[in-house]
Image (cartoon, rainbow over all chains, first blue to last red; front, side, top):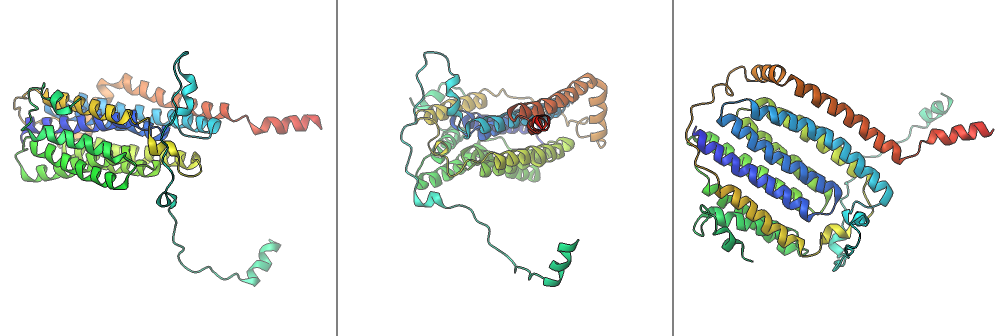
Length: 147
Length: 245
């Protein structure tokens, strides 16, 4: 296999993953999705590190990725606990709710142009009921209450 | 401000290079996916797929057929799923697309010969972190469709982020130096790959392993402390009730 071409291909894929994560982090407002985008950026870095590790025939890249995975797990635990707390305090996952924390003298962000909720937006996923409901055995009910 | 005009400043990204068009189309696809109209969102998916294909055409060939096919499959899966994850309207779908993207990344790792990390990514990320995401989504799901997810930030953020990210990726890609050819990586592709990885980890990076273990422990305690601090303990009130009696 052409090792140099392999490295270039992986660098492009890593860059794309990082860029997509960055885009999502800037654009989205749901706190959980923002955090997910941060994880996506870490993935891009991991792909790059592994590609360089193979190109130089060195374990350093893979070591770095092992520690990235461990730190990402710790980060996920803390960040999701924080998000849960913030949700309990505010009742919303919207990042803009916390704009009161902005610097003094900055103008407030005002939502404009919230689109009307259309009929097709009100469709919720449902589960199809399957099977038959078992008949209640009267005899069994009698001993159950005695146990 | 025109993206291609700015990208022309780069040496490798010219107007006749498919890479330029691929990055531009991919960026446009990402932006269109966030549009409120359903037709535009479909257009965004098509633009994104064409963008991925154009970028794939511009990449140098790997030389062998099987790795090449596997690479294209895995890379397309990873990049497309990550694009879908960041633009999905519902956070649940975002988490599931993120898991799919992780499977693609794990495949890329395996293709590089990083067997342990490929498996670890699936187990730790797709198995544990995504499940934690879904768990938190279940605990913190506001009622109804949240309007903020449908409009994102003010209309200004999407074009600025799109142009900025396209420029960033374009610069990264165009500034790739020509890498000289090297021999086969015998150390990484050795038969006893995982044993050597473990040996390296516990010989050279022992202190780092200890530090990471401590970080995980502190994160665990910290997460519990954060959650407890938010919810006053119920036992305190019952104790007060008991002392009142």
